[in-house]
Length: 263
Ligand code: MG
Ligand code: MG
Image (tube, rainbow, N blue to C red; front, top):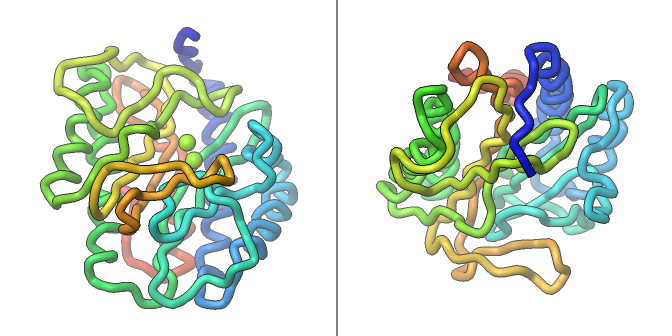
């Protein structure tokens, strides 16, 4: 499949889809607390997305049964919402998709549940840094490998493992378009970034080994060593040769009263 570059008009439509996902994550943020179940959050997210004139992007895609992918602790991505309450000290990656005007938005945030340990705080911080360090490389002068290498270098500097089996992707009228966007690689290698490219950039960083395995449910992916994994995702377009982040974590920061802004 060839890469489908987007026009300015399409990018603005994609910003709308991305922002609906951003607002959904912002709505969920204060509810991510000990005692809540991921299934409760899933229902709220579905309602919220439909109320905003969009359709849940994951529901029914590849037969996925829910609106959100909910991946706690050692689960990397693709977990199902369930009736197990979250508990103090957990982390939960909430990955959300929405379709509006025929275009997908797709982004994710890993939330701490209550108070988490310092080493988990560090994992979350570094994974989010990896996301922005990668995005910075998304300029028309660079190649895909420049982005992957930058993410990998930052994660490994902290002794973390970069998941290999799962990658980011092109985004548009389809949830997964070309190209694949690895969070590892070599500088100067891979395809050149082009004007109008829209990517879902999503580092998945493990506290321990990079190795992962599938659970028998056919979806959930966990770390082999059982250590936690974090995941942050933005939708990013190349506009005027530079990265333009279509999604935002600002709704989350506002809801939680965190003094942090998208870079
Ligand atoms: Mg996602
Ligand atoms: Mg994605």
